[in-house]
Figure (cartoon, rainbow, N blue to C red):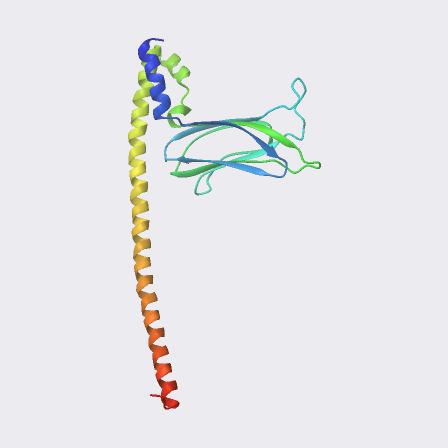
Length: 211
């Protein structure tokens, strides 16, 4: 790979690090959810598998999980029941948090299993070696294509963030308006209570002929 290719790779990694790869422990009878904020019409792929605690032997029957991938509006993109591995791929229909939840059935005595999970979003979800083979691109062309797609995705992400910011500002405006009305109402209640107290005191002292 030439100098330009070596230069482009860190840029791509810095601009669009949309890969989540992790390994975690999951105890039987418990669940774990991983969330990603994904904008609409964005491609997403993921794969998971349970690590065999006894290398060289079959995976124990107890090492099974149930996996569900859902969107903010509870759209189901993937469901695997009592599986030891699996993968999913989808294009988000709406923007917002998307959840991948793992649940391990209860066992007695309890067991703990280790899960490997990788989740790629957007540019990272593309199979670039496959693209290069199909289009007969060299390494430099692949890197330039990646960079072009990355810039386009960042441009779309900026518009998405701007829309989210406008929504937040609108919500803040409504909240501030409600707070203003609440402040005025609270002030009126305080003045009314103060007036009633003064009237009550005047009436009391008047009956006692102290005024």
